[in-house]
Image 1 (tube, each protein chain N blue to C red):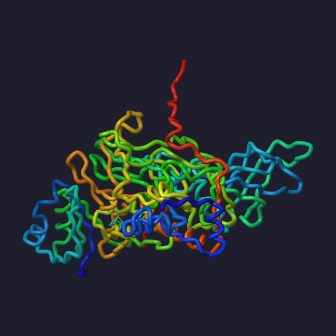
Image 2 (image 1 turned 180 degrees about the horizontal axis):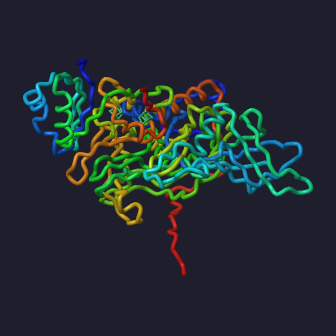
Image 3 (image 1 turned 30 degrees about the vertical axis):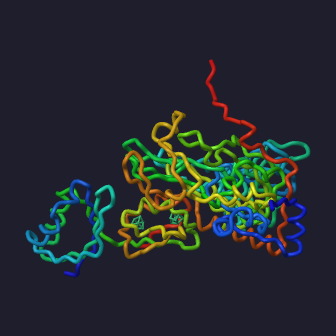
Length: 400
Length: 133
Ligand code: SF4
Ligand code: SF4
């Protein structure tokens, strides 16, 4: 008998402490043992996780008012500029922002040892942060300058708001050129010296709900160690399906999430300042999504394994930077995880950028929260567009 | 003279030459090979304890062969708290001192295999690898 559940059914079971929750890894073994139909009857929720660098992250801060008041026009936190073209004492600090005196890539390859992501990590670790602000002075906000320190607990709000997180799938990056290159996929050695990839495969949230049947505005999630929400689709949300040579659908690709949560609930274990040599600074973010097993179809996708999920192999020496279409083939996450793959008749060692053990930990924490009744599922008020919506990216064309 | 600990780095062109043989035969040096490895690009690294009368001559012979010679005075350590087990370092560590345990995908660090090339300090995205002098 096929099963149909509602969010209310599952939340009732969570409240009673009766919900059956499995991580995305655990559900794979269960399905292997009992099949999709039986497992769907037994399991209410599958939890996923990912822990990787997510450049589109940042935090809205409200510092409170000084005496006399200042309409902060320019703001720096530990020397890193924050955007303050908002209300008087609000600012947004993006994780890729760098100190103004950073040598950038003029010392190629630059180190980028400190940026907005590192400030956020220190903030959430409750370390004091140097705040500097300047302004032009008004009748209601007469002050022109302030320099002080803040801590997370002393300021009014700190809202992590990440416009494009949790990429559904990612390229496996290689370098066909003859010099080492420094990319957001890490350092790539020449002549196919290594192949880097960056999702947690079978634990990855959006790979486990490729048609966006459960993820939408209001989905409650694990974010940075606290509870957060999916608030919109991410920027560049172009969900599609990766196809093999015979035009067969393999798995999801191209979806992204816009997420939000209270930084004060989060922890530096799940928000880690990150640097990519020759590329820039960012933040490694932990995100976990619960997938309610509303029916068999949802479970079928949630139980996909590393053998069934693929990444396209892309050359970052030429094809990627010059936006040339095509790839060097597809590779499964199972193969990537073994440590070497074959590309153009060469054995190439593989290196991940996102942490599989931490992704597993996130899926377990989320499972525990739900089992304890601390985390109810948020029913989306609107689902995000899936592959059927046919969204695709627009190129930026230069005009006269 | 007490033995000196040094690190040798061989390019792909020098890695297959009988260099150590010459150190022993031509310079009469006493050699203790602490670690040695060749990476998939055929570059070699070796940590040696070296002593003998003709130590200096031996070293200059090595340099003439295009081998990089550095004293081993530093130690690389991993900040276990900070390491996220992402694995980015594992494809860059020439001796597999940093390696991925499978299937758990935990990254392990075996300091005994480290030759202090400092590559991991450059590629670790979260600055978990540190040098101790
Ligand atoms: S310094 Fe780092 S990369 Fe080099 S051998 Fe030691 S652990 Fe490996
Ligand atoms: S790159 Fe750094 S964080 Fe990642 S596994 Fe290696 S030491 Fe740990």
